[in-house]
Amino acid sequence: MKQEDIIKRLSAVPIFKELTAAELAPFVEIAQARFYKHKMYVFMQDDPMDRVFFIHSGKVKIYKTDFSGKEQIVSVLEPGEMFPHAGFFRKGTFPAHAEIMEDSNLIVIPIDKFEEILISYPELCIKLFKVLGEKIVDLQNRLEEQILHNTYEQIVLLLIRLCKSNGEKIDDQFKLTTQFTNRELANMIGTSRETVSRTINQLKKKEFIFLDDDGYYFIDRESLKQELFY
Image (cartoon, rainbow, N blue to C red):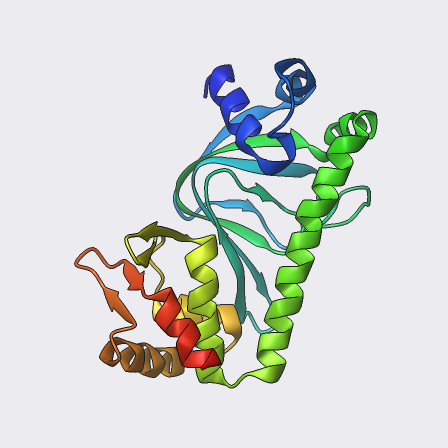
């Protein structure tokens, strides 16, 4: 990856967006480009946390496993996003696995050097805290969904959330830009593949969602919202 690509990608990340070329330069100097093939691990849960990553191209699945090996998908990240969000200004280990879903180019920055530069730019710290705050709110919302909604409603809420995090608007619908299996959808909310399959079939019959010939979901987000809130 050329330095121009690193500059272009970092300048598109929310916390760097308003920086001048001179302000961005210290981050570019300590950044390295890395290529990862499909199914490779960027890091594994409980590895020492020493780097932060920015996605230039490709997709990365973040998930946790328990003592029995059961998988809980936290998110599927796309170009422009950074990870992990936990770990700044503290020592520790990576809280989850990061697995490559398709060949990816990542920008890697050592956390200790990243923190040193952050301290020199208080406005960047504020931006970072805002990004982290949004992640905390998202996690709180997911917890509330599990407490306050039944499984059918949780699946509907998951599809609505994916429209924002992994979708692009096409006319009045959203196309998910990642191909999700029923197993992966189930692992996002802690239910069974069979339950997701039944719910997806119900939503297809109501014409709220459909699968195109390439295996991508198209979702009528407004109809799903009405299904829940009206």
